[in-house]
Length: 110
View 1 (spheres, rainbow, N blue to C red):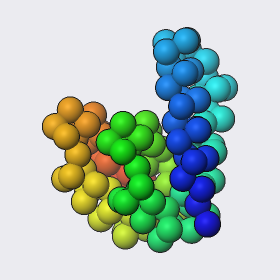
View 2: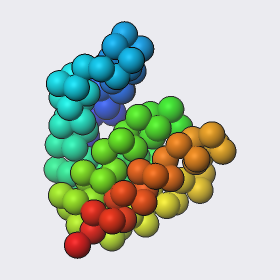
View 3: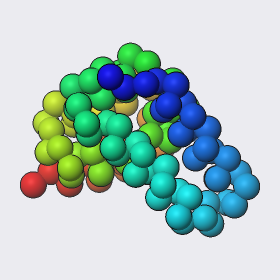
View 4: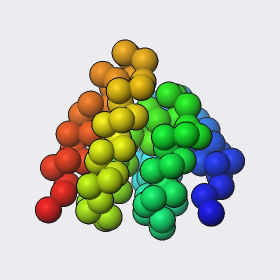
């Protein structure tokens, strides 16, 4: 079972790294990405459900950094469909920000 509070904590850590280091702490960023990837690829159906139903637009913004990793690891067409549905529900600023991440995820499908 995915712990939504764990996701929120990782997002908070990722935001802290961004603010404090202007994204210049590669190891810290990678640690966040690795945690996200492990969580969302463990059970892709549950991961999709959490993304669609539990995550705020701000959380989607930060998690979108690893859409490509999730797609590459799972090769899930359902995941690609889900991130398109998520995109359609986002505010305009978030939509624009995550479009490149969605394109990268699509390209990661073999």
